[in-house]
Length: 128
Image (cartoon, rainbow, N blue to C red; front, side):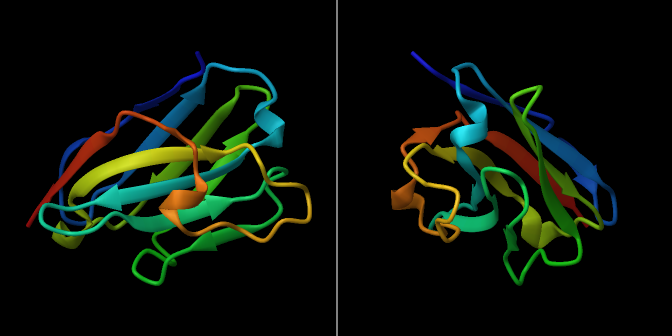
């Protein structure tokens, strides 16, 4: 059974940085579209960033654009989320997700329902 395993969350102060990692335990990592989502208490899960199969196309939500960067290393079968200049509004559980049904020319999928594999989540807490 394939898994996504996240790491890198924690408690930081406003203005600090964190890098989240998410490792894939299965095969064919380079065939996966990958995304990071987050869910804050009492709120719906929202997309944070998405990256295409070959890393050439990326999406970042308006709330994180210019501060967060998604990347992937297909050799390490890992997707990353570099988070800079964190603020308390970024406090949430962060999930990585994988879509195995996309093709090279697929548009980036921004809905959580488009992803069939999910990590367990990692908590990010930003204090003011």
